[in-house]
Amino acid sequence: MILRALPGAPPFRHPFRRLAALFSCYYFFGPNRETPKWQWVSVGGLAGTVVFLAASLGFSFCISAFGSSSYSKTYGALAGVVILIFWLYLAGIAILAGGEINAEAERQAAAQAGHPGAQQSARTVEQPAAAPDSSRAPG
Image 1 (tube, helix red, strand yellow):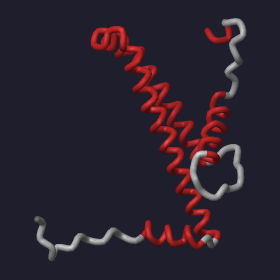
Image 2 (image 1 turned 180 degrees about the vertical axis):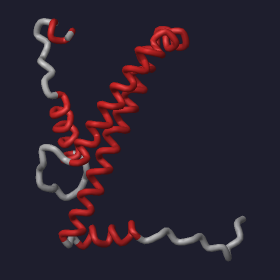
Image 3 (image 1 turned 30 degrees about the vertical axis):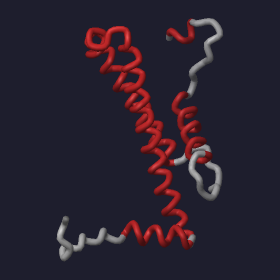
Image 4 (image 1 turned 90 degrees about the horizontal axis):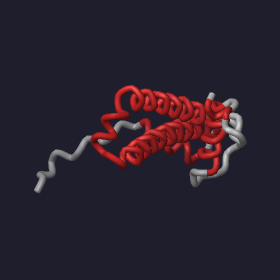
């Protein structure tokens, strides 16, 4: 592996575990809510990690197989910036997807535990949306 050949490069052992722990830290410290019990690995952390790694590997394959010459032809010297911004977009989607899964898991756990705010939220989510009032004419 190239990174192991570099002097002073950190060993990249267990990247999945480290990413899952990093995402779990994001989801523990990030939201503005009552602090839950700490977990090293959460469901959202695992899901975010899987989505992040799959998106990164898939994007790497697409760029190496199809895009290296076409990006350079289209964007010139800015091709690296365009590729980096798109990868950051994919990473953001993975982080948000894991956060949504964590938020829903915490909401359901709080509702089952009897937290009144979570129970009200559960009732609001489970009710179908009200139909728009057809008696009012637009305009």
